[in-house]
Amino acid sequence: SKGVLGEVPATPTRFKEVAETHGSGKEMVLPHAGAVTLPPTRFALKARPYFIGLLAAQAVLMVARFLILDIWGALLSLLILTLGVSVLSTGAGVDTGYCFYYGLLCLVNGIFDAILFLERAVHVKYPLFSRQAPAVFNVASLVYLSCPLMELAAASLAVAVYIEASEQESRLLMPPLASPPSDLYGEARPAEQFQAFTGRGYHL
Image (cartoon, rainbow, N blue to C red; front, top):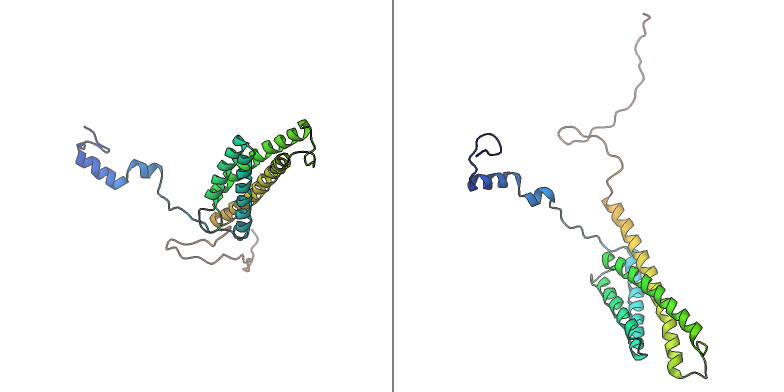
């Protein structure tokens, strides 16, 4: 049978030699590149304590939603809290990949909780906080008010951390704007300078 060039016996040994010479198909399609681990930004390091504080507040609100029998809202808060803990799994700073999804989920759930709070404020027979209402009603009002505020604050912080990390990654991976040309041996050549003609002129 025909090989790659001319009449070459297509034996398993020959296929092995070709594979060793040109590399496997996987390496040809997707060249190997080392994973780049970027250091956390200064803003991420400064925002980490605030991030932990927001997660602690969300944990308290999650338990409170279980106590007021808002089971569906408590489960969503538990999902957000789990994703928020994954953001801090790097040990220093925050994980920008999880941070983006955490911020997006906080934003969506914060909008729905804000709508739920407005609907509750319109349809209940008591004001949001009333001495005539039972204590559980006032606690539930405080929980429904605090949940969207904490989630929207966490979303804003997560987006700010993600944008800062993306800008730092772009600066580190961007090639230099200009560099002097090099010769065949890789040595940089000095930049050529323009010099005016100083010889004698002749008329044709």
